[in-house]
Image 1: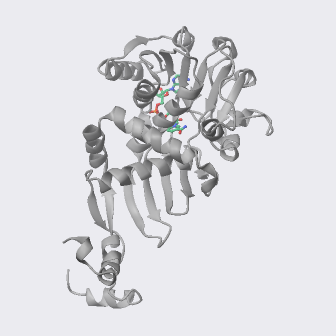
Image 2: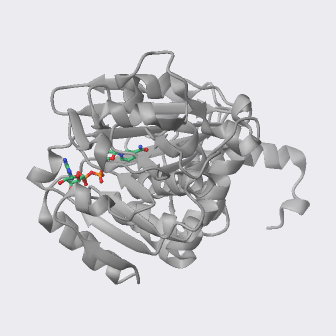
Image 3: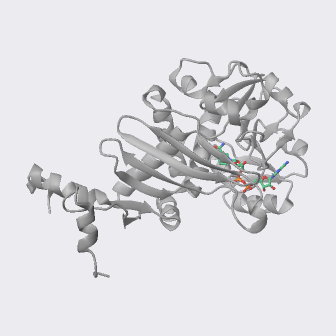
Amino acid sequence: MNDMNISPDILAALAPSELAMVPFVSVQDMMRLVHREGIENVLRDMAEHIEADFRRWPDFDKTPRIASHSREGVIELMPTADAELYGFKYVNGHPKNTKTGHQTVTAFGVLSSVGNGYPLLLTEMTLLTALRTAATSALVGRRLMPEGADTMAMIGNGAQCEFQAMAFRALAGISRLRLYDIDGKATAKAAANLRAQGFEIVACGTAEEAVEGAQVITTCTADKQQATILTDNKVGAGVHINAIGGDCPGKTELHRDILHRASIFVEYPEQTRIEGEIQQLAADHPVTEFWQVLEGTAEGRTDPREITLFDSVGFAIEDFSALRYVLGRVRAGAPHVKLDMLADPDDPRDLFGMLERSKGRG
Ligand code: NAD
C-alpha cells in the first residue's frame, strides 16, 4: 500500500502499532550488515556519523556514565540525547572473563524517539562497540598523528585489537603493525587475523620492542589496576598515543610522566577525569576536548616533536552515533527482525482490558 494514498488520520492510527514492533539487530544480523557493507566502509561511515555528532556537541544532554563497580569489574549505562533521539548502551568490563571463556566487554543498546519515547531500535553492541571505538580512535588519530605515519605499535592484542588496526588503515593509512601482548596466544591470533587482511606484521617479545620505530602507539590492554604498560623512557618525541584500555577508576596503562610530556585530548573531561589516564593528574591539568579540534576552536598537533595522547574512555555520543548509523542501515534494508516488545492496546488507556482479552489465547 502506498503511504500517499492513506489519509493522515489512518496513518496516525497505524503509527502506534507499527512503532510497537521494534527492529532488533542480533549479533548474526550485525555480522551480516558488516559483511554486506564491507568493514572498511562501515568504519568510515561510522566515523562520519561520530564526526557529525561531535561537531554539534552542545546539542547533546551529557553526563558521565553511570557505573556500578565490583571487585571483578564494572557494569555501566551510557545515556545521551539530542532534541530528536535518545540513546543508551548497557556495557560491562570484566578483565578476568577471558579466563573462563567469556568476553571482557559485552554490550547492547537502544535508540528511542524523544517525541513519544518509543524505542526505534534495539541492537547488539558488542561488535558495535569494537567498531565505534576503532572508528573514534582513527578519527582522532587522523587529526593528531604525525604526517606520513604508516606504523602502529599495538600493546594488548585482545578483542579490540584487529578493529583498531582496520580503522587506522581505512581512515589514516596505517599499514604496518608491531604487536605485543603478555599472552603470546593473543598476539598469534591477532597476527594471523591481520596478516590475512594484508597488514605487514612484526610480533614483538616486549612492549619496548613493539614501540621501536612506531609513529602511533595503541594501548588496549585489560587489567583492573594501575598498570604501567608504557614507561616514559619508551616514548619518543613526535608520536601519537591512542590509549583506550584505561577506562575505569583505578585502571590505567601509562606512567604519569608520559602524561606530563604529552598534549592530552579527551572526549568528555567530566568523565575522563574519573576514568581515564588523567585520573593520575591534578583535577585542573589542561586537556583539550577533541570535538573542539574538529570544530576548529582548539588546536590539534602544533609541532612535529610534540607527543599527542588520546586518553580514550568511550563516551555516550559515540554510541549514539553508532546507533544512528545502524538505524539508517536497518531502514535501508539491513537484516533485522521485529520484536513484539511494547504493549499495544487498541485503547491506549485500556492496558488491563488487553490483558484480559488475551486470556485463553495461548
Ligand atoms: P581483552 O580482554 O579481549 O584483551 C585485552 C588484552 O590485553 C589481553 O589479550 C591481555 O592478555 C592483554 N594484556 C593485559 N595486560 C597486559 C600488559 N600489561 N601488556 C600487554 N598486554 C596485556 O579486552 P578488549 O575487549 O580488547 O578490551 C581492552 C581494553 O579496552 C579493556 O580495558 C576495555 O575496557 C577497554 N575498552 C575501551 C573502550 C573505549 O572506548 N576506550 C572501548 C572498548 C574497550
